[in-house]
Structure formats: C-alpha cells, structure tokens
Length: 198
Image (cartoon, helix red, strand yellow):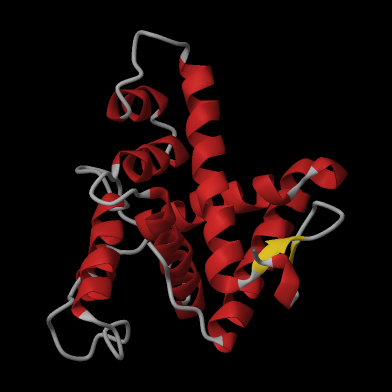
C-alpha cells in the first residue's frame, strides 16, 4: 500500500527518524544502526500511546466527532486505518492509570510512525502488522501465534523473522514512497537523490 508523502511529510518523517537514531544511540552507543533506530521508534510509539490517559484516548479515537485535530484533511480510509492502529495499541484492561501526559508532537510522531505499519500488510493480510505490535509490546508467544509459527521454531527465531520482515517492508516503503534511505554510514537516514529511489 502506497502512502502519499508531500515534502513537509518527508521532512517530518526525517525528524521522527532522527529521534529514533537518538534513541538507538542512547541504548546501543556506537554500535547502533538504522534498524535499531526504526525498531526503537516503533516500540516507543506504542509505549507512548499506551500511556495516554483514558480521557485523551477517547478524544484520539473519536474519528466521527468534531474537533479532532487528526481528522482534518484525511479520507475516510485513512481515518479507519489510523483508528485500527490506535485500537491495536490500546491499553490492556486493569492496567494502572497513566501518570505521563504526552505532548501533542509526541502523540503526532507516534501515530505517524504507526501509520508506517501499513507497509507490513499485504492486501487483506494484516498478520505481520499484528505480530509487530505484539512483539514490540513484548508478547513474543502471541506474535508467533499470529503468524502460525508456534511450536515449529524457537520464539527467538520467530521474533527475529518478524522484526526483519517488518523493518524490511517499512524501509522499502520509506524508500519508494517518501524517498528516504539509510545513510551511507548505516546509523541514520537521509533523503534519497532522484536516481536512488528505484
């Protein structure tokens, strides 16, 4: 599935990816690479949306109510897709109240990064997308079950396969739709020049 990227969307995506590079550098030091950055950005996005207070979650998921800042200029299909991503990252029942109030740009970054999970889906098959969300939340067993890989291989191998397939599809989507590629040093992202996107 192709996403439309305007120049300002590309700049925003590069800022988000730079944030992920910072997360990877903080966690892995000099041994970090663009794959670490992208995976940490996904896990941080899910974690941040999990910590949104319940009242704020109701406001974010109100696709048909007026006043929703995400609804402006989006098609119905885009709103449905964003709503599905929000439901996938919802808090589990009986989790404690959130004590963190995320800033609007943090929430915007998280929702934007989770939109990239669209590239993990093939037509009507969203199993990889669901497995990525489960794996990013630490539920390796459930992620393996979603892909029907339980019992045949080790969970660690399945986790590696999920991460590798998902990051590959997201990187391909960023390259083809946004013109963003990993930097030559392998630790960040840059805008591709016209001949490099194909």
